[in-house]
Length: 282
Image (cartoon, rainbow, N blue to C red; front, side, top):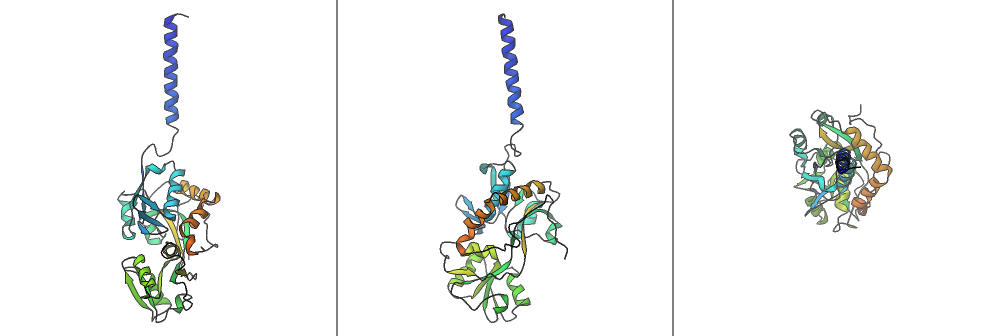
């Protein structure tokens, strides 16, 4: 074999190797090196919480697991604060790709956005001081001071349906409600049970507060997506895998277990099909 033949074979080998590299690069993650913008709460301990450069909580753990199954690394996640009042607009305007932020699936929201999931079933409950034995549910709040955040309908729902004489106290955040509860200024705090569990699980509140454990609503936490999304099947498959591997249970225990919280085992963990979420017929 002469030099020209050797040179030709070498060039062919380089070309073949380059083709192989290109082919392999096309089989990489579905993210193709791009970031994914995920909306979360920044002020809900145990669910979505910003601590400096760290983002912690059950919602963020589920989001990380789903993102990984979709082909994104941790470094490709861009966390975006998603306040309750802004969530639909953020999806419609393309500010985020998906939202994990105690985002209840509802008929009115489904007119604007899509939902994968649900990944958790919550229910409205009450948080009280550890030694409290008087408050056992929403119908035992007559004459009591009940705290919730400004603009929330949860406390008003109790007043309208269960205890007309309950005294409503509004604060800017649930953390402020907990401060008032610890100081004896209010008798109970109300919102979804896992949100209360996250507050009760903080180091300052462990052993001091407890959930009554008598839920009286059903809230399905979904993953908010832009209308017409084609990602529901892949996201639901990722959540099912998280449940099957035990990672879902571990995430619940890690983030809110210290409060003594026990989730509704009749509804949790969820088992999902491939379809986007809908509102069940009444």
